[in-house]
Amino acid sequence: MTKRNALCNISLIVPLGLFWLQSGQEEATPAQQPVLTEENPIEQMDWMAGTWKGPMWGGVFEAHYGTPTDGRVLGHSRLWRDEKESYFEFEVFEVRDGVAHVQPYPGGKRATGLRLTEHTETKAVFENPDKDYPTRMVYERVGADRLTITLTDPHGGTPKRESFELTLE
Figure 1 (tube, one colour):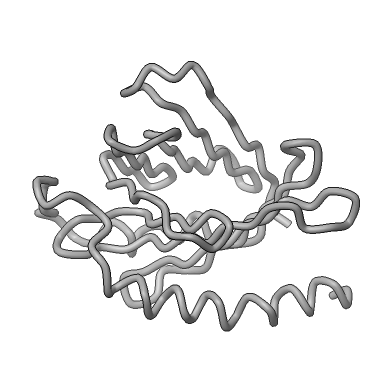
Figure 2 (tube, rainbow, N blue to C red):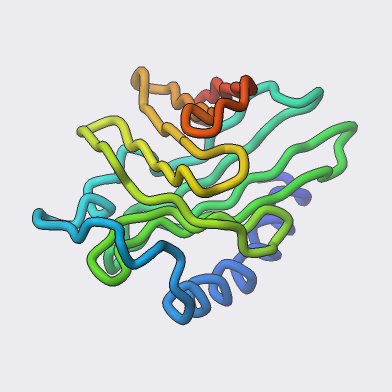
């Protein structure tokens, strides 16, 4: 492990812990959303676990996802350009009030959450038609060492579409 990676990992432990504690304190999804009638699908998202990297936005995008623990998956990602961090985001995948969702924190600031609308053994689709771009986020394990994250806005008609093609480190 390089010195930079060791420092980055240590510097994320405290913020991730704080986001984990905060995530249960605020409602992230509208009350009208459906309640789960099956087992917690977040507990089945172990296929995302690992460190993933790929070229994006003129640099190297790096995403880390933990294994499901206590019904929650914690993630963080960042963009490296010229060996400097130019973007970061935290994500909390969990079930709250019977609704499975992802709560993003781009730049460390809470954004509008998206609810889980579809899931399989290797794919999770999160949507919120009332959110700014993206209104749809798809996480899909497309191979033994490949993860694709696709951001779109099929609800609001935003033509923008971004796809992150990541490889397991």
